[in-house]
Amino acid sequence: MKLTLQTPMLNRAKLCLGICIAALNLLATDALSAVKIVPKGDGYELLRNGQPYLIKGVCGSTRLDELVAAGGNSISAYEPGPILDQAGEKGISVLLGLPIRSPRHGFDYSNNDAVKAQLENVRQQVLKYKDHPAVLMWVIGNETELSVSKEDRIRVWKAVQQITEMIKQVDGEHPVITVVAGIGGSKLRELDEYCPALDAVGINTYSGATSLPSAIAGQGWKRPWLLTEFGPRGHWEVGKTCWGVPIEDSSTLKATLYLKAYKRAVEGQPTCLGSYAFLWGQKQEKTHTWYGMFLPEGNRLGAVDAMTMAWTGKWPAQRCPEIGIRVITIRSNGAVADSATHIFPAGSKVQCTVDVKDADGARHTTRWDLRRDVTDNPSSGGDAEPPTPPIKDAVVSVENDQATIQLPDVAGNYRIFVYHFNPDGSAATANLPIQVVCR
Image 1 (cartoon, rainbow, N blue to C red):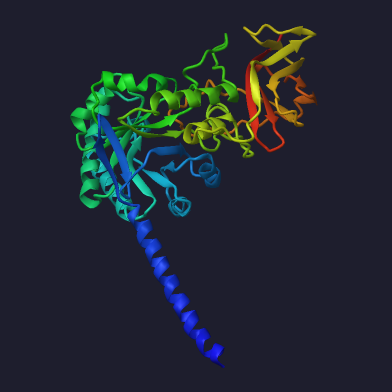
Image 2: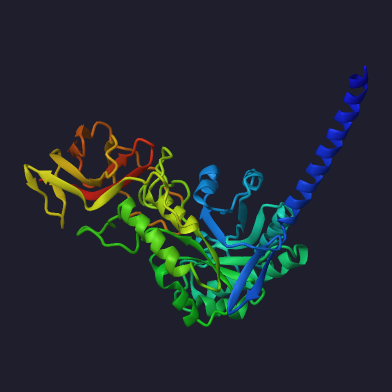
């Protein structure tokens, strides 16, 4: 009887304690929404909830558990939806994009009514999400100035300044930045003149990342900055075939470039607040493998290992396989094909060998496919592109690191892709552009 009388009292005590703990957790979580940039030495420091916060981020909103395991702490997103809650639950902050239209997509910044309507739309977005604890900063647009005239670019900057001032009126807890496509010309000088209210600038650059700090200093930019996109060499930065299409680096070479860019542009730079690697996921942009840090099926590539090293100082226990410097060798009629051309008759067969490095002695698998090459399409700035599926029955046979591929009867540009898998599911990939001609 005595135990029966005390049990309800004990349960009520436990309930009260649980409520108190939940309330304290909620208060602690809410406090994470306070973000400030403060001077530190000869640079700046980002404070989140009063604590130093170096951004170790990625562009993409999937595979968040793997991001945390790799040492990452932030994502960049332009369509928040449920991702704010999902990121917040895992302790991941969100660089939250506020989409504004670009002149290259037809938006007219000389149309005052359209500019006012866009301003109001952004205001509503800020009001909707400003109190969410996962929000880190506001980003006004992404490469809005890309491929536009200087006159249009100045109109964009003036609109960015208006939006920045508005955000600071309705939300004083989060810094405001805009993101530019590189800093060529005098973009940073223009931002200094037309956007004094910005707290920092985000810069998207690929090969340029290794020399970015000196380039920023060269334009006299004194405010903080973020490396908001970096990764492999872009399709506009690599060599081309004799018929004019870009030659994509292997995933192994890309991984080396990710780590090199991080060490030169971010690590130890006093005015840099952190970075976002592109792309934590997969997308079709020129090819289906160019910018993704994962294959479409979800297999991680070497870029993930590289960023794990950058963020934690340690390589993963199980590394991705590697592709060597010879990449893919093609033989036609028993002879090694001329690597300067790789032009073959329609309907012929070729034998392909991939240069892979398997140091762990585990059993690996290799897959090949052939696809139409669409890298000469005119899209830019990450504009949407349709997928390029494999050509059915093009791969005749596969044995170890070799494959025989039946080339189409239709002339055109194609790419041979290879994917090499570890037993744990990690992978390496490479491709080679070829041209098929009728003779």
